[in-house]
Each structure stands twice: as structure tokens, then as C-alpha cells.
Amino acid sequence: MANPLKIAIAQLNPTVGDLCGNRKRILQYAQKAHELGAKLMVTPELAICGYPPRDLLVRPGFIKAIATELSILAKELPPELDVLVGAAITSVDAKLDHPAESLVNGAVLLTGGEVREIFPKRLLPTYDVFDEDRYFMPGIRPNILELDGIKIGVTICEDIWNNEQFWGRRSYHIDPVEELTDAGAQLMVNLSASPYVSGKQRLREEMIQHCAQQHGLPLVYVNQVGGNDDLVFDGTSLAVNASGKVVRRTPGFEAGLAIVDYDPATREFQADSKPAIGRWDSSVAMVGKDSGVPVQQAGVAELASSIDGEIWAALVLGVRDYARKCGFSKVLLGLSGGIDSAVVAAIAAAALGPKNVLGVLMPSPYSSDHSIGDAEALANNLGIATETLPIGDLMGGYDRTFETLFSGTEAGVTEENLQSRIRGNLLMAIANKFGHLLLTTGNKSEIAVGYCTLYGDMNGGLAVIADVPKTRVYSLCRWLNRGQKGCPEHAKLTEALNESEIIPNNILTKPPSAELRPGQVDQDSLPDYDVLDDILDRLVHQAQAPAELIAAGHDADTVDRIIRLLSRAEFKRRQAAPGIKVTERAFGTGWRMPIASRWQLQSTN
Image (cartoon, rainbow, N blue to C red; front, side, top):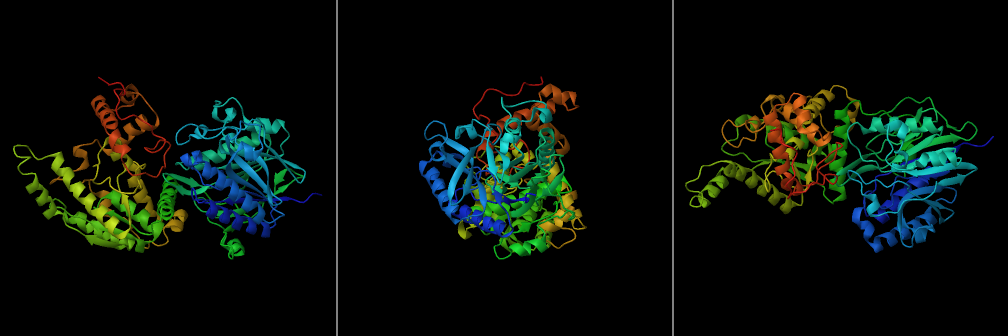
């Protein structure tokens, strides 16, 4: 009877462009996989260079350096272990029948001290944040790896997403999985870099299960984890039998190594009776302690129990990795006593530790006592340091400077925005002086309609909740407070936060306000956030026409006004700090609207 094929799932967190560092981490995982008896290890898509490398791929020196690192890695690997590494490689290096020097997104087989074979990605996505045919040539034939007499179909990310039966449509003229089935594949592996958006973990798993069932092929799915710029990758790698049964699911939002056994006799992965776990199994992780590689040899990790839990995990990981990969150890933000800065402060404290977060209070003559008190209470709950910089004198200085020029005009939005710009300047000065990363606190609802100030509250290096609608901000805060009473993913991600009420209740219950003038609240300028967020979801995410919004019960004048605000704010969004993507349609690299344009959604009037 043939021995099981032990496959190692290397759920890696690469840094884009850190070729040497990524190589060393792959080697570290490979050594641990070999120690655990693995014959094959699979990494995520483009693991050697990190995903997405974007226009680094047009630099010949970058591509040559990747080939060099692959050659070094091949010689360093345990000789008994075969490794499929995601890499960008030219057709010359790959010995493929593509035009000379064309680039492919490949799964590179390293074995016996050399680059043995290249399996190019077949389907190159060009939607949302993806732009792969800008850089790569597609593969032209099914990718079959023969290992120990087993025919393994090799696919890369998008290759398994063109399932007409599951989606009810076909986006490409070929289905690589169908072709692999026809070519006699007995098992399939997929190297992936699938960005997180809310709800995607479950949808992706359902698609993979359907794919395995439809084609009768067990499937190993290896996904990248970590934050790279505006994208967060959740990992949540899988091993699924041909029946659709999930026999291995790795913990999401964390790097680690998982082991799964494929039985050639039954053509299935061996299931185990180990109960579900939420993290890398601590008893097993001790095996990998010396190498610093968390290990999951058995078990099916739990998914987050709610969308709020998923989004929280993604935002915490996104902040942690953005800071770490950009070279920051400390962050700061303005604390207003409002809900947006409260949730950003909580995310930052969970991501980097409270001692690495500075909250700056900048009260104006219009700031209420309760807002200052709420900000201080929040900081105390989180255990973060604060500084208070009153801006009343600075506002007076601006008034005196503009006294002549602005004489005869009424005070209004310009003067209100000066408060935000004063605060933005103060925060940037602190960031420059101490080398901190400034986090902006604007939410998606505000950014959509331009309810934010250029060179003011938009100042910063990372817009943490720029893809989180206001209603979701409230939901996250309530989840955060509830989670202290037993939510497992909350406990996992907020170990440093010990208060029973992290977000003070007054922040959750008071009307949202920028306090730009006495008695001012957000709803002086905007519809209720429940109404606004539904309109924006229909416009931005569902691409509905105005008539559809009105048919859904929204006031025609309100729809008209929001459409105009959405269009007019495009120039602001173009200048905003990068935001962490958690929805299918974010105002980031996948949003490509013109600024100077006469086109606008058809008026309702």
C-alpha cells in the first residue's frame, strides 16, 4: 500500500519586494515541513516577491533578482522536499513556448537543488484591484505535476474561480479545472493571493467545495495572509475532499504551517477527529517553537462568528502590517471624543499594543466638556498615552490674519474647515518630529460624500476605516464591547484590552458631531446614516440607477443630492491616504473614476 503524501500548506505573510527576507521565511517553513515529514510544500501566489508587486514587475532588475533568489532557495531546501513557490518568472527562465522575455505568474517547482518546472497561471484577472494582464502572459496548457506516481493539477488563484456551474456565468473562455480533470489530475493544489472582503471567507469556501465536488478532485488551497498597502489577505487556507468535506482549515489572519495527508489509495485527504480550533494549536505549535513557525497538524480552525469579527481582524492585521512593513513602530491619531476616532484608537491598540499609540486631544472653543471627557475615558480604557493641545489661540491667529481679506463676508464652512486644518497640521508636526505613523479617522460614508477636509482630518499615512461605513462603525463598537463577554475572535485580537466597556457608552449614544460650531451635528448636513449608507451601498456597490433607489423608497431630492456629493468629492478621494479594503467596492486601487468629467448619474429630476 502506498504511503500517504504529506503536503505542507505554507500560509505565509510576505513583504512586497523583500526578496531575501521572503526567501528566508519560505526556507524556514520548508525546514519545519521537512521535519514534520512533508514531501510537498505549497506556498501562496507570488510568495517570493509578495502580492501585489504592481509596477515593480516592469523593472528587469527585479525579475532577475527573483530568479536569483529562487536559485539560492532551491539549493538551500531539504533535498527530500519538493516545494511549489509562487513567483514571477520570464519564459526564457521557465523554458516555455511563450515569446522571449515574456513574464508569467508561475508556480515554480524547486526540487533536487534546482528549478525543475514552471506552471504558469492560466487566467489573469483584470477587475477591481487586479490588473494582471498588464504584466503577465497566460499559460497555454493544463499544468500537471507528477509526484510519487500522483498526478497533481497545479492552479493559481483565478484559475479555480471560473466555475460556470457555481456562478451561473463564465468570465473566461476556458476553465483550467475542467482541463486538468480531462488531463487525468487526481489531486489539485491552488496557490492563491485572494484579498479579504467581508463575507468572502465563507463564499470562497463554498466555491472551493463546489469545485471539488463537481470535478471529483480533492483540493489544497493555499492563501496568502497579511496586509500589503490597501489590501489585507486573510489566509484561511483549506484542504477539501472530493465530497466537499473540509478536512483542514487554517486559522485566518495569521501566518503558519499546516499539514495534510493525501491517501493515494482512497484519493482523499485523511480526516482526523481533532476538534475545531480558533488559532494554531498551541500544543502542536511547540513543535515548531525553535523555528518560529506556528504549526497546525490537525483540526479545522473556526471562522469568525460574525462579519464584525472578520472586519475587526482584517483592520487590526492591516494596521499592524502597514506600520511594520513601512518601518513604523508607533502611531498617533486625533482623539475627538467621537465614535470614529474611538474605533481607530481601539484597532491601533490591538494592532501595535497600547504603549505604541498616542492620542492627541485638540479642543476648540466649540468642543463640549463631554467630548473631552469621553476621549479621556476611552484613552484610559485602552491604556494609551494622550497629549492635549488646545487650538483656540491658533484659531484666533487665523481670524486676525484673514480679518482684512475676509471682511464683509459671513463666517461659514471656510472658517469651520480651518479648525480641521489646524488640527491636521499639529498632528503632522508630531508625526514628523517623532517618526510616528499618523492614522486618519474618516469613515467611508464621509469620504463618499466629501464630508472631510483636505489637509485637515484627511492628513495622514493610513486611513484605517476609509472602507467602513458609519453604520458599520457603530456595529463594530457594539461588537467590541459585547465581545468582552465571550466572543472568541475578540479575545484573540484584543488581549491587551481589559476594560468591560472599551468604547464609553456616551460615545455610542450621543449624536455624531464634528463640533465645528455650537450645537452642530452631522445630520445638519447629511441624511441619517442609516439612509445615507443604504443610498451609498446601492450607488457604489450595486451600481443602481437613481430610479431604482427611489423605487426602494428613498426621497428623490435626497438621492439627487447624494449623487452630486459623491461625484464632486472625487478630487478629495484621489488625494486621500490609502485605506484598508474590507468591502467589494472600496475607494482605493480598484476605484478608477475620472475627476474632470461631465458624466454624472442621471438626475432624478
